[in-house]
Image (cartoon, rainbow over all chains, first blue to last red; front, side, top):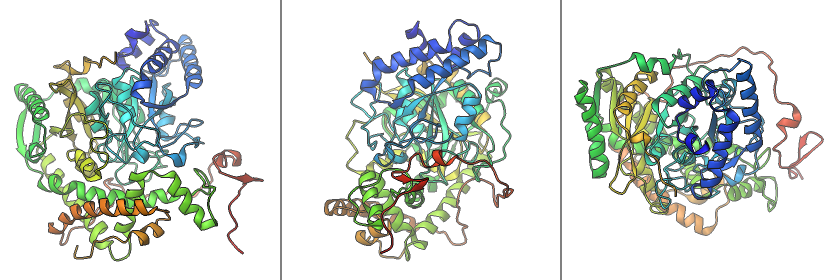
Length: 490
Length: 96
């Protein structure tokens, strides 16, 4: 039975649970068996809570038997990027500085998922503190792409994408600061949704760049992404940037919104640097909508295309240098035993605990915020950020969504870009501006390269119009079978 | 951005409370030099009269009632402390 379950969407698993054909305990056991079989090679997980997951599965089965099931996610295992707090489980951010940290409380998204009956299954690998685009910056070693184990899964939520692609998890949570859900989703051939900034509470998400971070989901289908979003979205007084938005039944809305839509294609997102196979697959996806009667219009986002990465690396590093000041070896986290005195404790604990990319970004952010440079770098970046947001606002006035590649290339080789930070940063060229503008974005599978690597189609929506964005994505997914293909992992 | 963008790695490492080795200083200076060179392109954007944007959420001045709420028990709050004694965190001596 187990092998039949590992690639079913969560919505289908919910039906099977509801009809009694499978049990939650059986489902969790199937996921454990799959993880044991493949994760030695994929390395998506930092840790699994086997006993805890089985206990919650048993409780779910008992609720269901008593007629008290809590909804479609009751009994469904969920993988958590190792940056989102689950009480009693490790929270490492894939960093040595938090290697032994245990969360004392639940993130808001965790509370909501638990209330819906979902089962926190384990902790998924990532770039250290979500800083990276390949998961190679993990202090615990890289995750491999299930489609080609010599390649990266993308990042920073590489474990979240790889676990879903490899059949270990039906759905997972990630976080997206500059593309960290959408880019790994594209490179691993799964659906990745980054919601509008403010829709999902960041309470219990270890902060990287607070004005850009947003929790979202990886899934096998758009419907599953809708299901998870509907569970985790909503206002939270514990996150002051959380928005009092109405949370519709995203899954029900999928069936109500039928188009045709007006779709924009930003011409700058198809220029130099775009791999021809990726470009061809995305253009074919655009043709799908044209044939379906949608109005396709070419639009222009010159500032987003040219300046987003520069703006991002000033703002994100500035915020990171401030956020990561809390890791000082005093109250929690790694404490050096070599310190000469109290102040040296900070210097040594941080030097021993942080990896190279984190150190680089802390130094850059410190520079950007330091006296004499603030106006020139940080303030100017915030102003260009306003201009980029305005550019999107203008374009989205006449378009329901924008279509582009998610990433300029398919998965690259492990080690290929790890010694050149700037080359790594440029892999986020199509996703990063979406975070600056605070918009929702989704990546859905739209084909494969000749070498068999997945390609992702990015769709960018209006603020808080996830229902519309998901319906547009679902329209494409229903007419194609990319999402039904799985890596061999033989 | 008419400032000298050469970064002083010793000064910044001290501000950031990061002990760096000589090799790290050399490597990071070179890599961050590349990145600073890249972001120089922002100089060419006309930002006259543009308001800076702190974040993308349309919420401002969020107030909260000043009421007591349950917090973590001491044992839980100190669970991750590297060293503790009698419900307090132990640190190296800070005064002579």
